[in-house]
Figure 1 (spheres, rainbow, N blue to C red):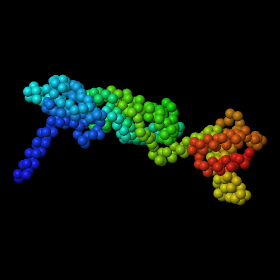
Figure 2: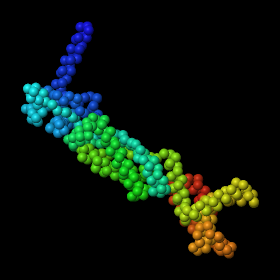
Figure 3: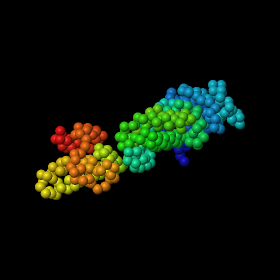
Figure 4: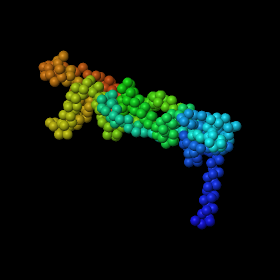
Length: 361
């Protein structure tokens, strides 16, 4: 080892020794909610610097012995009386033993979280759909002593341990609350994923998280982004089923809807095949669209004898000729507009069906 290496090592040792006389949050931990000072043996008369937005807690044997706020403090029993209970007598009173925790008191924003909620049953269709949640929130330490004691009891005294634990609590509450709200309030899953109930869900999650984290002196201040999502293929399935449910209601029931669909299929087949009477007749049948299917289904149901079960033989020809007591064109226009407003039919479908209905006025 050369003379320059010896001098370098000596300088490093001196710097390290001098550093022990000053305690502060490490530069790389400036953005940490919790920073635990690595040394437990601290010299008396050491200078402690506490930032303006933090507090330093002294703990020993799972008990908070004292705390110091923002400013510079000389760690001497004359200046800080509670240090006397931490002095090591074997060292002649030159050292005290404690764990030092720096806890930030400012609001920490954009803490990202996310994960699977699991299968959630959609009240409208009865399907169990795999659901995800992701977003970010801000949190704030409101009681540093509760936080340190709680984390010490769990053996999680590092910043990463704390943040990971807190995220898991948020995700757990989110899972429980969403499943509960869908059951109690019967919110369609498509409405939930569209963001229609985001504010209500956020409030429920914040209140639910408080139950689990309040005893640790931490709370969620607000959510910055909160998104509940499902797979695109599941969304397409739900939209199709929701559309079928809406059309069934328009037709007066599922049986009528199924019969109307069958008759509509027959009409479309005639339109494509030409049938007797050429393309003009086929186009006319095809242009009737869903409205024709519903009308024919309604006529079919009106032709059934009173009390007859679905699928029973049709009534006599005279009864079949009786006019159907269907809904008015204005009622059908109103229902058609509601379907478009709910996003269950496209603009083109709406315009085509509206044109056909307007011709009947």
